[in-house]
Length: 126
Image (cartoon, rainbow, N blue to C red; front, top):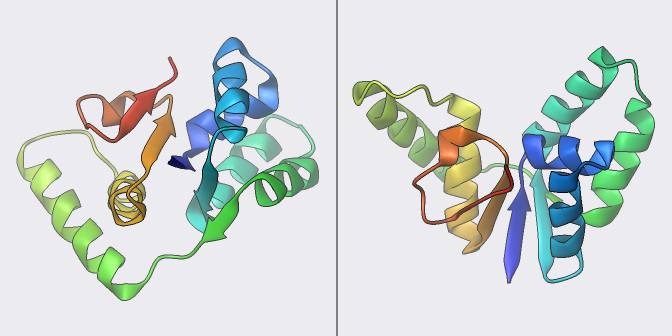
């Protein structure tokens, strides 16, 4: 099984929380992916927490295949984001990029973010 790990799940993993233990188990079970945008979010959070952002970067890049978005994913993400906003949902553009990327990979999204609740691809760790 393929898993795309989002920012919230990586943060839990790095903190060693109970939810992070769930992420740790999944790292052993399949092919793990991260988006470069997720790395940016995690680094920002870790830096603001006053923790070792270089270590966080090394952990993510050594435990996952880091992917970039392409123009097709960007287009589909923009369309999904517009649709979600039209429905009045609090769903960010990066959330849309993560979800579309997950679908393109035919993966499960590992997340602690309730924005993804109700999406069949999402494995909520909280």
